[in-house]
View 1: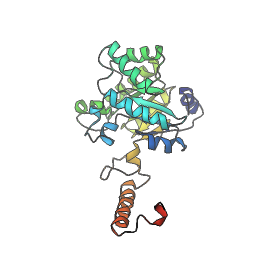
View 2: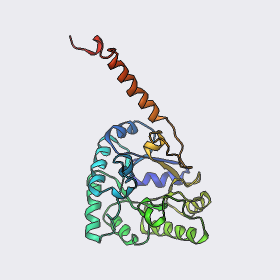
View 3: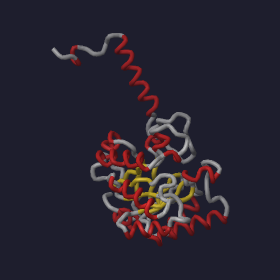
View 4: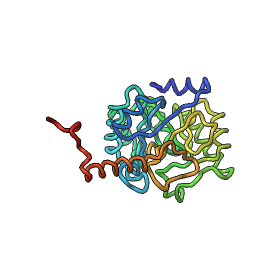
Length: 263
C-alpha cells in the first residue's frame, strides 16, 4: 500500500487492510519487510515509548521525531502520523504549522480524532494537499471527557452521532476512518454506509481493515489484555529470557568466547 488510492482500491475489491502502529526505525525496518499494509505513528507512543498513563502527553515535536525515524526505516510502506492532543484545536495558522511538521517529517497522511469542530480543518488540509484519516468511537485524547477507556456507541443516541460524524468526515474528504471500541454491529453499519474504508480496533470483523498497537500484539505489556486484543507473540517473556541468558553467560565466563574476540 503506497498511496491513499490503494485504500479505496482495497475496499472496492473487498480486500482487508492491515495496519500496525510503529514508533522507531528498528521496528519500521522489520515491518518494511512484512506483508502489513501500512504503519501508524500513533500518539500512543506517549504511553508505549515514554511511559505516560494516557496519550495526552504526546507533543508535536515528539510525534515529528518518531515519524521521521519510522519513515527512514519503512521503505515504501504508507505511513500515517497522528496529530497529538490540542495540536489541531488552536486556530488555523497554528494547526497548519503543526500539520506541516508531521508531514515534513515524512508522513504520507495525518490522523485526527473526532469530527465536531474539525470538519473545516479537514477540508482545508485536503485543499492544502494533506490526506486525512479520521478516528471515531473511543478517542483516547478525550479520555477525561469520556470518563475512561470505555466502549462507545452503546445507546441509540450515541450510535446516531458516530454514524453522522463518519459521514461528515467522508464528505469533508477523509480517505479512511478508524473506529475504536464500538459495538461490532455499529461498525458494520458504518462500514456499509461509507464509500471510504473503516479501520477497526475493537470494532469487530466487518471493518474494512484492522489496526493494533505493536507492543500490545507482540505481548510486550504484561497485564494489558483488553477484549479486542490478540497477542501474536509473548515478547515480554521471550526478551526477558534472552537478557537472562546473556547475563548468565557473562557471569559464568561463557561469553565472549574466542569466536567473539579479536586475535
